[in-house]
Length: 225
Image (tube, rainbow, N blue to C red; front, side):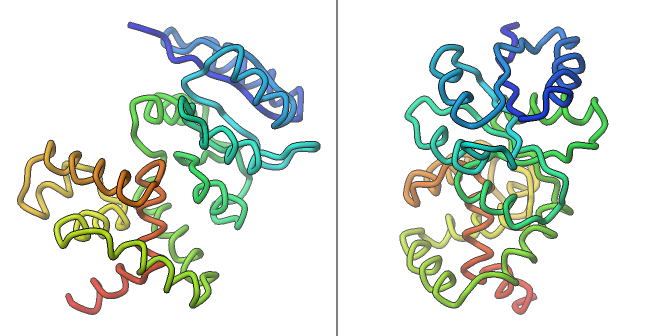
């Protein structure tokens, strides 16, 4: 089994040391480097080619938001999991909008941080349905009318089935649950998700969820029930 190549980014050397000690003990994870800010992280990504970057948000020089956006814009972009101290901080939402695959709290138990890295490396977002709903409520509360209009314009590119899948993703459902709810195979769900990402020029299903909430699709679904 090929080890997951992990880059640690945090401006606090003690935090980096703790993460390195914790993550380095896993047989399936290889720590390929450590960085103290976003600029250093970008340079290290060029040299080490990590699969996953564990990225602090608040850092001097180049912060985690800027670094995440730059990394996710690359053709061979690594997955990014942001480190934060708040569940529904506006900066977390911004990180998700620019392509982060999820987030973990800095006081998260070690086993859960390891699980998050493994999930992201496998292509799964690190957001439980409960946390997704919490974040989405915050996103809706802070979204302007112009954001809703733009989201609806972008989603107009989807056909009806893709729109249903986008709503299910917005609810925080995994592929298996979406397949059961929409009476299709898991493989078909994956195909629809891939097409949605391509049509809307999105990085991951977290961004699908944010767009669905911005457009008000989740509110419409609740009203129809």
